Amino acid sequence: MGCVNTKGRQIAWQILALSAVAFATPVGANAQWDVIYLHPGGAAGSSASDVYGGQQVGRANVGGFVRAILWDGSANSWVDLHPPGMSNSSASSMNGYQQVGYATLDGVNHASLWTGTPESWVDLHPAGADQSFATGVDGGQQVGRFYIAGTPYACLWNGTPESYVDLTPYWAGATNAQASDADGGQQVGVAGMGDGPHAGLWTGTPESWVDLHPAGADLSFALGVGGGQQVGYAKVGSPLRFHACLWNGTAESWVDLHPPGVNRSSEGLGGDGEYQVGFVYAPDLYRAALWSGTPESYVDLHAFLPSRYESSMAGGVWHDDTYVYAVGYGYNTKRQRNEAIMWRAEIAPPPPGEVNVDDVFPNTMFAGAMMDVTISGS
Image (cartoon, rainbow, N blue to C red; front, side, top):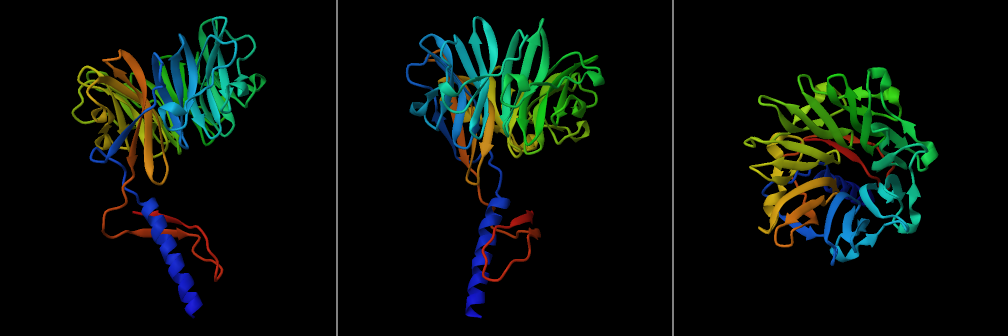
């Protein structure tokens, strides 16, 4: 019995530790936010676009050329991804071991894929395209857009230029389209409809297109996707303003994230399924912003920057069990340049009190075994 009781105590401690993660409190304006400066020494400007698993991607102006950059959490950790022979390059997104963006050859932008080094560069540019850009990546798939005669076409790749799939939903009446991000088999972007741009969602084929356009909106764009949620903005209200917004797979699920008291515009640029980032335009400058699913959850990330930063934006967000990370850039008025920045805050444990557990899965196990469980509740 002593052995059984000991195992029981071990299981109880496992459940207690997991519940602290499962019911963690979203970070807010009162959280302790750290600012980590990613700007490479000697660069004339830089910006970070995305963050995942402790690494960040973006670009920096080094030696008179814009170059795709991969960071490992600090300014001096930067790796130059710039492919040999290219004039410019930029990294837009990352997930796992892959990074995507574009590189410029003879004045033509080529959608690009890397796996951590400049030598790993893969040219995704479709044959016959005038320009192409890769803007999202997940699970070995890349998304973006290519242009022919000035018309954009949403595109999905599987690691090679020949693998591209045109996602443009012609069947729904679209005349053009652009894909922005990918996660968990979903792709998001925008399609040009008869009454203007409509935010949309795909699952790998043009026929899978779901129109996310909110009822009554003048236009809408989906720019980020994570954990089954889509992030972007719509032009709504009276007077019409850009409002950051969040979807859960349908137009009817639309949530207006526009913060109370902000009388100008806001836009959502990225999300990871729990947090959303972007910016608000208030009162007359761009300010990096973070949300956790509601307009009231708005955090003014710009407020944590020193006064030398006049404006800022956040384009990527990712969290683990301990921290939430947001990346973007701020404009340094003293240096007169954009500088890559990462914001970090510790995810707070739940306050003391009662936790309601609705389900534990699995709820049986072999005696003497150790196992992970998933707890749901509030």
